[in-house]
Length: 414
RNA sequence: GGAGAGGUACCGAAGUGGCUAAACGGGGCAGACUGUAAAUCUGCUGGCCUCUGGCCUACGGAGGUUCGAAUCCUCCCCUCUCCA
Image (cartoon, rainbow, N blue to C red; front, top):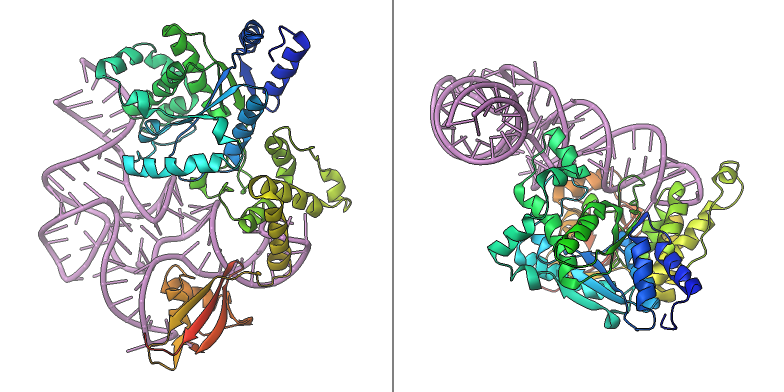
């Protein structure tokens, strides 16, 4: 931008902004704003907010982060808002029940890791990072009353997740109504021109437009994005559902988790995660069902791209090697965590004790079950007796497919 | 403020005095199979043990009745619905 109103350039920008989105509200106004500002060098203020309700971001978050990246490439100002205040309310979006509120300490701990995780996808040096406690914490009760006077209960109840809960007789607590007000006010405080989010955020995002008007600002454009489905292939990706691929997952784990998505999800992942950076493969499932084509190779390609984005090409290579070796050939990973235990004067250690002390099993009862099910191997041999003795020396323990530990048993007193 | 309904394991949901560590479904884990950590099939899924058996803890909370309670009684807490 910057070379005066150029319609073709505007088209290109708008197109990039729309790519991969579900809805683009306020597109026409945004186009006008861009045209007006062309030549002034004044960038758009583009807001993306996340609540530090869990310490880990996952691939679902990267879908929107990639869009933020595109805005940066177009020369706009990215604002990453950490909802430290909102996390203590608990976002009701898409929830079938009330979220447990987090205490300040948890929120702070989670927030601390966010910027690092975002840095895996974006150049955080060029981002404005803000916390909404900055202005929300400073609000007086009368400010909050004033904010709440801008929207009606009936309109809040139109919102899908509230409506469903209300109808089903699932409790809705009054503080949950506060959430969209705060998120909307964030846009006022940040003077956002554009806000990005998942499609489950549509209500909150649109409400911000009205609140901004009430506070004398031009309403932000809103661009929503599809929600990435988790590795289970049915629910949206979420840490609490256990179907998430974390941004901080080790390359090997990340690679394996991508490999574990259902085949039918491959296209979707290619498209949503591309962020305009990958050419998108559209596998031919009809061919696969006829035994043609190579779905496995495609999935490997997807996994490699995902891991490469977050861990670089070395990570991708490591992930691929680990998968071939451990999963396909049922082998032992290249690097197995090592631990040393002392025998404390005994001749040997009972297998179950070792599993328990190494944390390879959740409880001793689980350990017994694992052994009974044939899930436990010592040095590549399946062991049927939980009380089998392990002599001093080195033992490679394996529980199930993925839990490994190299145990060094020492005779020294301990 | 009044009246009803309800709170069961990770989640949903049966069970209304002993046969219940609690049916069934989902989830999770394991084994088999497979191009895959997909799909499918089978098994397991509170803890602890000297383990084809035994012990401890558990059905919102606290007491009580009973040889014995998730199931009966009392009080308390929480949610939903209707009325005001």
